[in-house]
Amino acid sequence: MSQLSRREFLKASVAVGAIGSVGVLPMQAATRSATDMVTLGKSGMKVTRLAFGTGTNNGHVQAALGQQEFTRLIRYAYDRGIRFFETAEAYVTPGMLGEALKGLPRESYQLMNKVTTDEGVDPKERFDDMLRASKADYFDIMLLHWQHTPDWVSETARWQDGVLEAQQRNLIRTRGASVHGLPALRQMPGNKWLEVAMIRMNHNGTRMDGPSGTQNSPNVAEVVEHVKQVKKDGMGVISMKLVGEGSFVDRSDRQAALRFAFQQAGVDCVTVGFKNAQEVDEAIENLNLALA
Image (cartoon, rainbow, N blue to C red; front, side, top):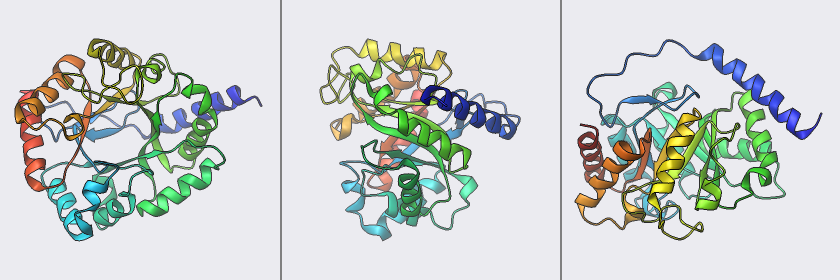
């Protein structure tokens, strides 16, 4: 079986399983809020609009809290209604997050992880290792992490197959990729493998997708257009860099970023890294204002 036909077979098998698990979705409330459950495109995956990110400075900001304080902060966010938590294999936080979530009903929250698509690694073994590190039986969402080249789609073919196989094993429920840089972002519209797109977004292009993976974006309008296109394709959109990777010291900028993301770009969900309860409360309030 050719690589392409194998991937199409795996996708079809996963899709059949997913259809059987989708139930009747509740009607959306008239007043939207940060902690509403929203559906990520055609994937059927439901998450809160606001996610707790654990990757500030690759997670070192969260890790510096220590396990006890970090667990307290995760539980505080959970009690405030945030039920979507994200980490990455490349961060220092997967184990800490797994420990913090231990004891909570697994069906009550969604866990997203991101895999490094390096060479010489068996995807099956990597996913099994990631599950052990996170103390989890499955991941609700798995993203191909830090895709930053124009040919990432072809370069990650075996990782895409690996994700599909993990979905067949019910170890991963929804798949996607996070991109850095316009050359990589331009490959997302029309991609049939993607169910979720993670795209950097704020009102002035700080730490957004520019000509390379590291530059700011000189053309926010192009990023927004790609967001709108992938949503038309049926993908869910999760955005990051809503506080400019910590550079938005004025609350007015943090509020403007959220307004822009939801009102102009039309993203489904945003992830923000927190280091204290005050930041959690502010983000919920800012997002509620943006949705009003």
